[in-house]
Image 1 (tube, rainbow, N blue to C red):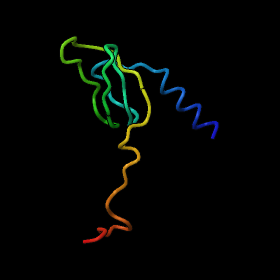
Image 2: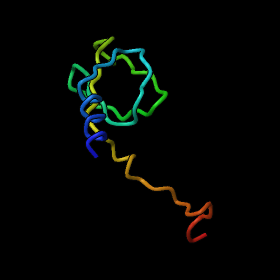
Image 3: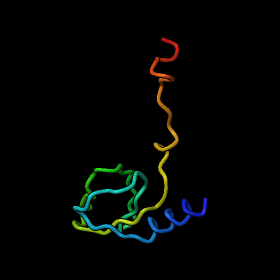
Length: 78
């Protein structure tokens, strides 16, 4: 449990620049106060008006809690 907390703290301290690869799924905040859900493998985008920016990990997104409509590979209710 302590290792998970330490990993989460490391994520929140790191800042990422526009154009870098996203390492962790989650919600990110930019220097201009905008929030965006990004997934591992995405590229950090530019701000639409301000251009290049820095991004900070802001926590898990709601997508993390969503579950697949399948259990054991079978659709439910179909």
